[in-house]
Length: 77
Image (cartoon, rainbow, N blue to C red):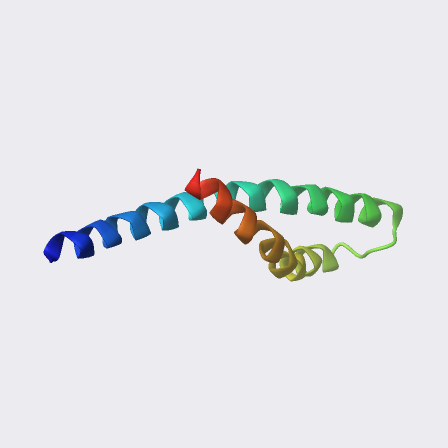
């Protein structure tokens, strides 16, 4: 009965690492795109430069909420 436990740990680790890799790439792309939009708003004067970091930081949970299910599905493929 040791084999199913080893197999379960292996599959869990593989799925978790692939999900983490896909999520980090997607997070970088999506947050980078949003940061460019925030930066263009700061160039116009709608947002102060001090608020750029906070806006980007506060956007990350929303982005992760969208990214994690998609990255889990892509990790299973």
